[in-house]
Image (tube, rainbow, N blue to C red; front, top):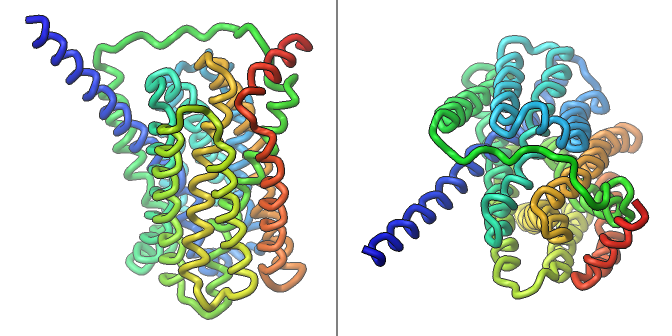
Length: 409
């Protein structure tokens, strides 16, 4: 009886773990189509709406600004909405934003839905890290890797499929049909909400350091923003860059999907390596990821036509690894799940605001210089600077820097 009971509990725990990962995958898949679907269709959108490159960049900039603002307010939003209702409203916002794009293709609608869908994306992203640390414990790095891989897969799928959808029903169908997976996920989430489960932990004011008073929190925010800034620029402008080099919309979309394959590989492999570490020193994994980004950008600058698949794959691997490792890095700093989640939310808040500037600056450089080489050079310089910053994240210093900040608070 005892052995059978123990086996039953182990099976239940295994299925709970698998179910939790499946839920993270479903949520992650819905977080990038709003951004990535428009990228290979930018020329069609520009011709149909008359928007300039700088204004088109706001289709990516606005969602990232929302991600930053919502992440900073995530504690109060969670207290007000709760985890269950917050994620449901977020999925609804993404679905409505995509549906509006399908029925109305004006420039105003595109910008307004970038805000609405961006708010939904931001709320889910702000809630997931704390949820993962609480539900998965020591297996949190693996869970965050699976979530990051799903998030990037959603973007790659959208970039690959949107030109094909546009060939069937115009560019509005290509950017708008992504309300369907959002509605399906919302229905599954609603079904799960009706099942008996453990109550959500009550939101309470946390003792200890407030993130905005921690020098380390600001350093993490700067670091996270710069190491991930390439994603927003590449998703927005890489297909446009290659269309200017003579590629078709379909081929440039496939190039972005190709990059996503390596983002997903990195998002799974690097956290898995982190999971196997007997310590929490992520510096060498982060350094390898940043070097991959740097190599990819230099390839796009020096030999964009020759070896395009290689440069995009290498850059994609670095970008995929940096997102998931950046989240793990913040969560490593504090042992308490709620305090660590709050630190990660602060880091994402200001980090995503830096991400938001990246496609806009790249678009402005494109209009000023007539090409994208200056944009790739700026990203390469930022990554090189962050390689030096990486050396500061020594795990044995975490208690000291966090405790010192708490005393000053």
